[in-house]
Length: 118
Image (tube, rainbow, N blue to C red; front, side, top):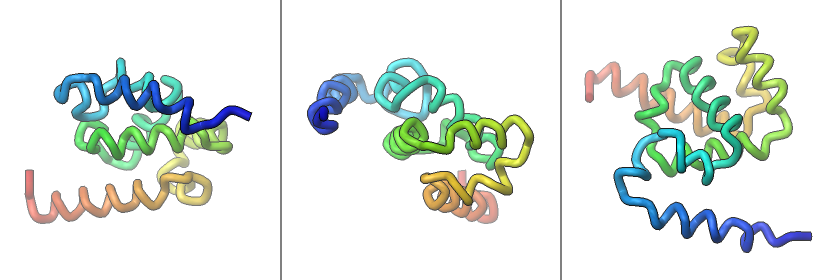
């Protein structure tokens, strides 16, 4: 059995070697290499949009963790089905390993909008 810590180290080194401006936000490209498959990045972008969250406003480290959880999730096909059918906003909390984090991000966004903080 492979050691997951040893496998992650080259990715961590690659992440640390990027310039700070490349690590900001939730852009694609190199960040997709770190966070998992491009599919998990796409799914997370779609879910964030459904939840009225701007992926660019999510701190890079949090976005990276969300995508890693998505890449390892055993409910990805259900998530994709819910995204396609328009049920994600109502259903994701039942199976998404990132539901708590996404709920926190939504609460923060609602508070920011209420206070009109930019």
